[in-house]
Length: 135
Image (tube, rainbow, N blue to C red; front, top):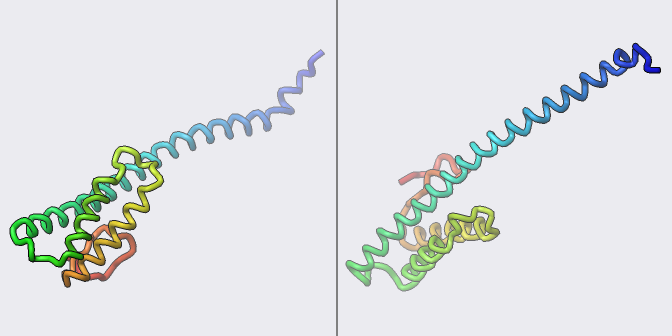
């Protein structure tokens, strides 16, 4: 026969399990929403940075078309390499393992090119670089 007090003895455990299950469910929902917001923010930042580099390359290639002697052959090679990296960037596959490698290469080539051209261009979106002269 069932003891009429069994439900009273398990009351605390029942409430604990219900609270855990409810908290877990809310945590999943909140985590999904936060993940979505972070993904949108980071995706926008990456697109903005790629657009900045693409715009610079477009201007430099236009200058080369007008005056092929305006840049050294080394600078032209770097511009071409940057253009290839941007075309190679997997926009539709953010989980591609090359994403960070390509972005790091683009940043490095951009800094090298600006240095060799004696131009002080700076992308405002670089993380952690405050108090830098900005263009």
